[in-house]
Image (cartoon, rainbow, N blue to C red; front, top):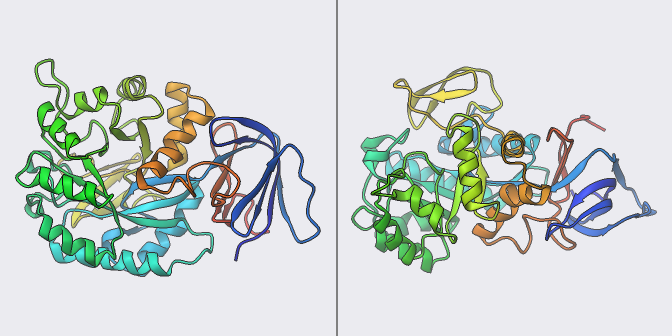
Length: 393
């Protein structure tokens, strides 16, 4: 059940970039007022105050496989519930359940489970499941990374239609290799269905990327990782991403998937309007180092780095507020630019900017309170407290 919540005397990062040192009132799950001084209403109000705090739009992670010991491919209600409950601790209020390349039956089970969970999810403080990011099986075997190569197949519209039906039309993003047979056709089909075609796990040439963009591709999956890199005679996926303003790039800012200089290069080329911070996290997030599993493959997490037995990176254990903190340290963006990369850009891509991704009257009360080090103190998911550092009130 939603509460009436009053935020007092905070730096509020409003839609459009305006900052206000003031108050914000949440009522019935939405943002009702933003002004310099709001008196507590006569009815019950939970008040949170602190001039050292910043109020940001809740983070949106469009690429996450798991957390707290659970994975989307577990295909259980308890797995999605655990993930949804864990994410507000890092300021994430919405996300896409991201699948792995596995057997077609396993993918269909995960899609069915996500559809059921999304249709019945209540406003109870959990991060909202906005849909599915289908990462595989339509990838390049040459750029498989941690995706099991034995299950990778060529893009296929008819097969995707079956997946789309199973998902209850809940697939929002599809990562694919457009250079493969059927890739351009599937890209066009996705575009016609208002589904984001994201180029990833791809060995496409620069010209092949341009053909995919011409068919409607608007995104790349985890920039730099498992894609054709930049060469002076063949710019590849990376070069096309830098040159084409209408391509949104996911970026994992954990110091492992891309070195600091590569992150700075991406920021200088794409700016805050062309980057989306993601975690690509797997089930070990929120847990200790140790032995885990991803896509049926053994994964070892040591010193915060998740790898397969051969040393290949296997997702991350990154939290969204950590990605925001690191991006702030490296590139020195404004608070508004950080909000773009962590919230509003994903909302635009997913077609939910009318209700999420920024702080404005009438929008969902998806909000996160952070301190100057981007530690999360309070997270509100659709007007309900999802996490409080102070614990139970």
